[in-house]
Length: 112
Length: 111
Image (cartoon, chains in turn cyan, green):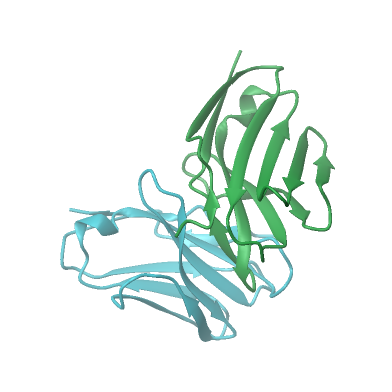
């Protein structure tokens, strides 16, 4: 069974640009979660999508947004990038109520 | 407000000895806890969990203990092996499967 896959592995952007990160969940999983892990910090919840709908979002500004497609894959968009957006962005998937979350290996975003 | 706390950023243990990683939580509504392990350049992987109806759950070398009155849980690894060197996160579900994570403890197991 293929795990959660994320692309790209690394992404380098300059301040003010937009970044798009992609995630393919495990087959059969309908929920996708996005987390940010900034240097020295734990995993901070960003967004939760289930069945194509945004169900919950963390304490992040509106320039962090995303969507979930009919095939349950997901995209995270970060607009107007700031230096402090540099972090590891992790995607996780799950079938609702079927703990635990399964994580991908993340996208390392560097903003210069 | 950090609802799940790991106050030790790092821990160094000799191979073969016991590793004890600690986690505290503030929300008494949490009824399920998980531990994840994370190697560099990889995503976190699920390790072990415990429901609040239990005070102990064991899986091979890994045991998690839960003290509800103290709002404290701990992960015991015995015997510790060099391959256990990683960052360990404790987590609790807040809404549905949305997990609140601690800041992690970096475990180093040396020969």
